Image (tube, rainbow, N blue to C red; front, side):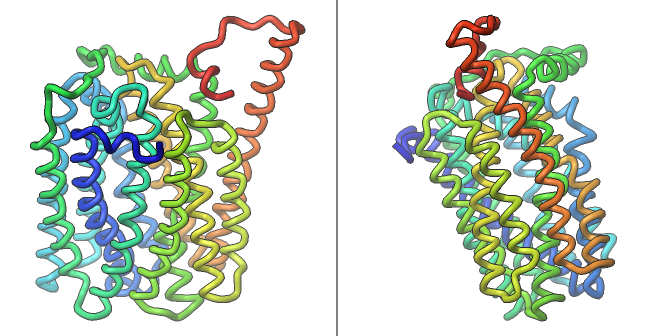
Length: 421
């Protein structure tokens, strides 16, 4: 059943709290990119890329510590701290923007501080899902989380674009600050006696390297991590792609930017809900998703009109989501519970931590050669990710067939091999 995780009180409470908070997050993301591009600079895509880099760099730099904290401490309490901190940061930024004293460096400092808090929030939040639903429903819960995140993307950017066009960016940041209350209320209402906590596998700093060693021994995880790194570094810089195409190629304004961002979310929600129907993640969706994403990016890069561009964004959102939801579920389901926090921290680091590298490059390409070639960077690099995944997938299927026919002797199948077939 597509929505089976919602039958559980704890997950249902978490889901709706996260949905409200996600709407605010997408409103803020839209307002931030538009403010940097059109208010604080003169259509400087490199500045937008630098802002993204500052936000996501901490996820890469702090991964050893953030993963350790997610495995050592009560994840619900960790989330109380991180969600409160992000709410306070959003409130401060809202005040600065609303009063009109905002400068580019203010936004950059905020992006860096927000990134630091998010580095600790992400692995704890990802690993906490298994405590809410248990092992059997992880794949469904991960897919519904993605549907919530991208469902909010349908609402947030459109509302933000309308508010920016009618009023100003400042109120958007203030609204986001108050949406964090929904997440804090949800965390407070969760019934702790119904949680299914994983064993705590981390006790001190000496356990940090265990997560690295675990992933290094898992070829399937290494392949997913390589594909996720390429997609996250070069493929998912859509705040740059959409804002520059809107402003430069189509000469449109903030409300169009918000609508185009929501168009991409339509595809993302569809992809997440489709993934939720499956009990287990599949390699066909991981490899096929990123392959179709390449084609969608090529279509988006060279489409002549804004309506066709919106359609291409929906396709890109759908195909990217097939990859992301199935890859996330695969990593969670096949990781040992006692190291899951550290593995998810590493996954988050390679997935989003590459943004400090890719976003400035993509921004520079968009400035130097035009927004369309910025999108082509995503298409070309993600083609490499598709090739890496396809080679591994073909080899696994070949070895599996040879094992069944008795022409090849392999070790007993692991949990991960059972799932990827």
